[in-house]
Amino acid sequence: MRVHATCCFGAAFMLGAFALAEPPATTSGAPPAATSDSHPAVMIDQPENAQFQSAPGVPACNTMVGTRGDPSKEPATFLVKMTSGCVVPWHWHRATEEVILLKGTAVAQMKGEKPIVLKAASYSQLPVKHVHRFRCSSKEDCYVFVVADAPFDINYVDATGKEITPTEAIAEVERDGHRGW
Image 1 (cartoon, one colour):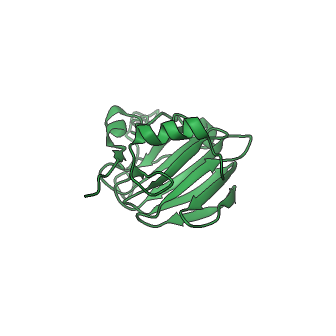
Image 2 (cartoon, helix red, strand yellow):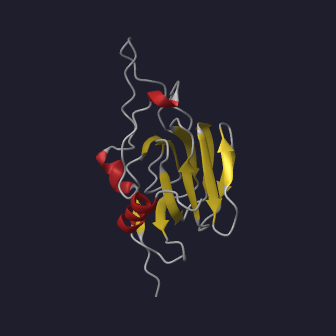
């Protein structure tokens, strides 16, 4: 029997870590115009200006801000800020994850493949349940735009593929860093 070490982001959304702020009223007092998909308009001029917050089950160096949807319940998009040297260890998702690196340089690796260097404007698509890891390798912070096509979770595994808890995965990274890749 497999035990799933799953960390869903729903709690963070309920606490407001990813929740979008209420759109401000216009100076005329009229409500903002509704968008075609019932979501408020979101404009972030530079990723550095977003209000990033920590989320449960991910390393503290990896903060996020929601841009559309509640990833605990539906497809969603969000921005991720990874500080220089930040590592998200081996993991997989139940959603397909599309990643666009906005700023910085990162290293991504699918299990069984060689690491790939991603630079600003790089794109990667990570299929459902494909084990991978990600590291911000630049001296500057990395900013990543993520699209999830289903509710988003993170399921950690160790180097052998055995599922582990978020606490174990984060402790391993804190102990070992990105040694070996």
